[in-house]
Image (cartoon, rainbow, N blue to C red; front, side):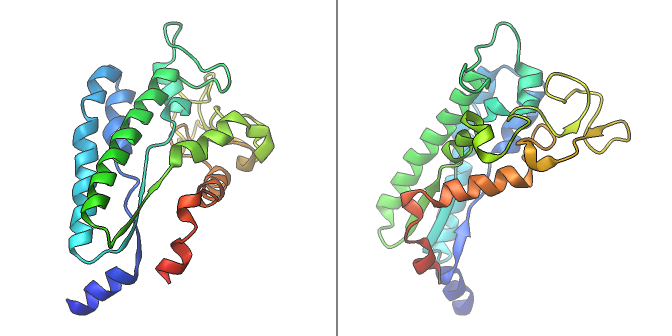
Length: 216
């Protein structure tokens, strides 16, 4: 156990991203966002419990990601979009769903600070997936996403190439010629090109400046 504890102490541990499916399933089944919002404290507490357990096991360097701007998801835009929803004029994303993601992220950061205050010898870094991804949705052409940021590369008919009867992988599904020009792969997951840009945006943030030295 001593060897295991020493190994964990020398490791950089990525905790998550946790919570996505806890929200995906009810939202995509049409549950009101107000109902799904009540799940957030439970999800965040579960993440914090995992972080605390890892610290007790000897972890010294942890990265804990927040939620993505889910209001920009092609699947969410398809299921939740309507004339009654407010769209961000700069991105075309659903404002209410992005506010929901920000609520999760704000609560998570508050709880992480409480854990950090109890463990001064541990480095806990919040990974801001939301703002790292939002740069793409604001400026897709800047990053080479010439087919826009909201339509899925792989899927079925519909405004965002997503519908309930044709899933990516089905024989009737269509696939774009060049996934590197799309942000969304299948309406829920992003393309490798999008994740590559998000990782570059993420690790350019100041909070990651000391990670390489500490994790070696």
